[in-house]
Image 1 (cartoon, rainbow, N blue to C red):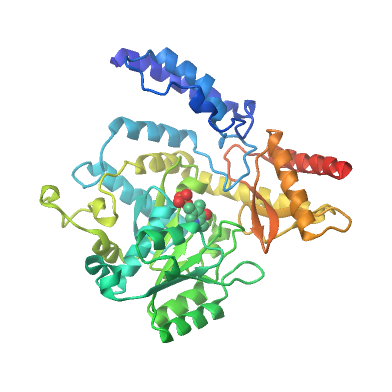
Image 2: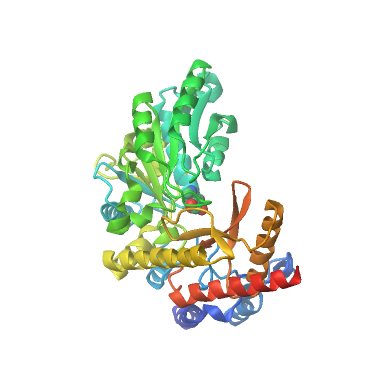
Length: 475
Ligand SMILES: *Cc1c(COP(=O)(O)O)cnc(C)c1O
């Protein structure tokens, strides 16, 4: 493509993005596509001859957009609502343009050093101690996988070389029953097996019971297991509950276990000074994951693993073939040494753009605003005689369900709530998701979109009330 054409189409694409981001509400928030709809609209083979950009851009509107679920829509309250911000999108464009591979320092010094700079900036904003260094990966799932690989390395069984079976160890790690599935997947991927993950029961507010953790470790040791790691969660995925990290850290210290803190969702709230408490005890962790792509308006993907024992992480993975040996390895970081992948994107650029554009103050005020909106929504739930709250609201997620007047079985309430969610979502203005807490179908209302205002939250509440009214009339 000539520079002239690139400029022309580039302007068109940027215009398209600017229009899209100024009116995401023109689309239903979640896609109405049927399964296979997009595939049917596209030829089964790649075109033999190149096509005009005009045709491509037309098909973007015609074929792609209808199949997009609009995470940018201010009525998106499902999962953990996230949104990339404009400065992040511009940073992403530039890193696509540079297209460097940040495997070694010398393969692009700026990529490596900006990674170090942004990690350090966020560390300070979150109030984590200087002993934490880190590395950027794509997702929290991979950050956690690498942390558990480091924990396995720290167990000193030489599994890296011998494999699990040859090392003769029945490894065991611990996490609450509400832990994210990425920890189960790490056990699968690292070959230590799902039975190596022992789930610890939680209390009435979905926090790990530390006495049960201690008992489990003791029992396992006497049965010949080799405990090596505990994963504590700050902001669980179902309900954003916060495990008691300090007492868990005491146990880990006493037992010599690696403590990994999954703060993928909860960690970024600590940029708000009055929320610092959510990371209490986390400073004693060996590693901690936080996802700027979840709550800090950085476009997917960008996850950070902070680690106090980077040498152990390095020992878990470093393997330098001759053709990648460089003279400066002593003075610089070669990030390929800290994970399974060789090639690495220049992710820090978009993060640097976001932090500079908003400033610490801008990030703080936005995160604080979302937490306040969630508290207000929770108050409406608490004051209503048709809804009830299902969990505390430490962050910007509200877990609740409809509980109309009258006698209903739990199954009946589950059915009402499922119908309520589906009908609200089908109206296209609001999108919510669900979980189960103690067997009860629970609606999750997650505020995290940068464009969500109080009016959108109010509108969602009105939608819920209107739809629930209709359901009662029908029944
Ligand atoms: C979202 C989330 C994850 C997974 O994050 P990915 O970046 O999608 O892998 C892990 N743990 C917790 C607590 C989360 O909220």
